[in-house]
Length: 311
Image 1 (cartoon, one colour):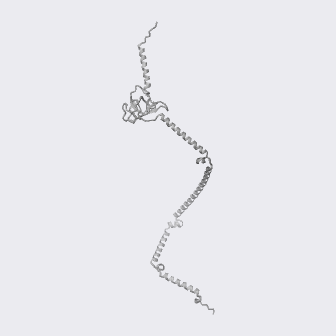
Image 2 (cartoon, rainbow, N blue to C red):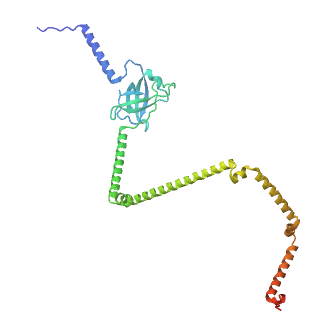
Image 3 (tube, rainbow, N blue to C red):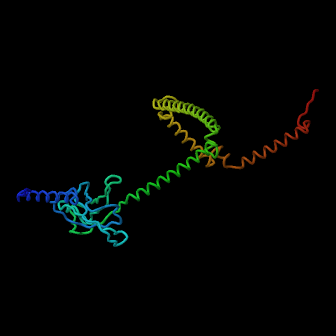
C-alpha cells in the first residue's frame, strides 16, 4: 500500500525563502554590478555615436572605482553624434561629484575586453546634476579605429623599409653621392690627408701663439722695468718725469726763444732786419751778380787784371 508523503508547512517556508534569496543574488549579480543592491542610486543619461559593444549591466567607473552600472542601452538616432542613449545608475554617495561640467567616455577593460562607462568628475563644489540629466560625452575612439590606425602605421613602416632597401641597394652598387662615399675610398684618403695638413697647421699656429705670448711677456717685463726706473728717478726718462730742473730749463729756454722770435717779427736787430727788410736781400743779390760778372771777365782776360814782370 502506497504511503502519502506529508510536507510540513515549516519546511515549505524555508524552501521558499531560500529560493527568494537565490533569485535576489542572481539578480544582483547580473544587474547590480560591483555595488550593493541596497545602496541608493541616481540615474543620468548620456548619448554616444557608437557604444562599441556596451551592454546593460556594464560597470560605471569614477576615478578607477566602480560606482554603478549601465541601466539600459537603446537606439534613439537623434543626430549624427547621438545615435545611442545610455542610462546609467550611480551611487548617491558620489552624486555630488557629478557636477554640470562632468563628462563621460567609454573605456575598455584590457585591450579587447568588456566595455565600461567612465565618469570624469567635475570641479568639486560645483552644482550637482539633477536626476535623469544629460552628461556630455567625450569620444575616445573605438577599437576598429585603433586597428585601422595601426594598419596604416604598419603600411607606412613597410613603405619606409622598402624605400630604405632600395637606397641601400643603390649605395652598394656605388650609385649617387652616398654610393660613391660607401664604395670609393678616395674620399677617405683625401680626408686623411686634409686632417694631416690641419694637424700641421694647428701645430704651427700653436708655436706662433707661443712665440707671440713670449714676446708679449717680454714687452710687459720691459714696460714694467721702465716704469720702475721712472718711479725710481733713474735714467733720462726718469729724470724727465721726476726732476723739475729740466722743466724749468725748458721753460726758460722757451721764454728766451719766444722773446727772440718776437724781436725778429718786430724787425729788431740783425736777424729782424734780415727777416723783414728786403733791401739787404736786393743788395746781396746785386753784389753776387757783380761778383759773378767780375769772375767771368777775369777768366776771359786775366792779363787785364794780373801783370807779371821778371826784370
